[in-house]
Length: 409
Image (cartoon, rainbow, N blue to C red; front, side, top):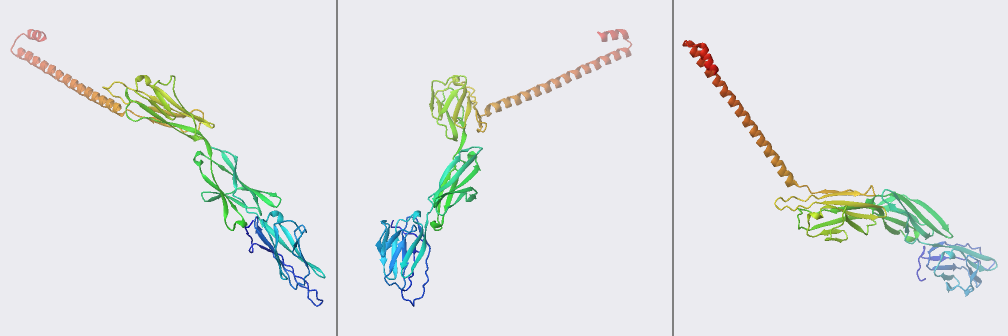
């Protein structure tokens, strides 16, 4: 009640100028000032008199009810107080001003003729910090509808949506609630999961705030189906080792329950589950199989598979093949992840063995080819020697037929 905020020094001035009772007096002009006061403040209502001769001074409210008669209270309203009554100035105060106090206040001077002056009291109602109402919830791939509401102001407040320093145009509506106004600004924007947590603000401007503004901050809450990813172990898994898997889950709302299972089998007795963590101590080949992590919320369901192969031959350590296939069971938009640990040492050994085998085959093939060609040359030389002996026997006069026979033999 003691707070006083007004334009023109929070003072409502009602100026009443009297006419002189003397016949020679001139008719005097009357002036008044219309002033605005903040709701809840204190208004000072003053009547300035000229040539006052003790005539009756009456002050009335906008409903023409008499507040004071020559300085005497006439209306039982303790918010009105007479603070000054002199031949030149009459002043009253009105505390805890409300919009119902608006209107014209009359200061009347009763002489031979009645004269009065009316001053209009205006009350400003600044807006409170606006509220944000969600008309349509934000779901991934859809649109969110938000309304910024200033339920009470006078005159109507100006609303503005902002995001990242840029204004978002909205549809403004205004309702008259008697002397005050309710204003709203509604926006519709498309949303994706990346928009979850994005900052928006609604700003309210009003002349009673003296250049300041009331701001309501809001963060987008975008709902989306979960995504599941199993974080596989690193290195080689052998019998006797321990397995630890972590199921990384996202989603809005975040799934509360994470389910672990083994496809076509029950979980091992030594399996320990603690929320997103799955552990098996002292691995054996009986633990081989495909393990499944599942999560679900109101907007979908997702799962990730992990295939475990444990090798027990210590002489030929083979890296365990860990293949994780992530897929969405119900939500087509769920993120799909694939993880694999490729046994590069095994692949390298196999390739080296193949190269060595090919080289050996080539060497053997070349050696056999060279040997066969040498044998053919040896038999050809032997045939030439026998032909020479037959020719020599013919020249020496021996029986040709006999020599031929011997040759044939």
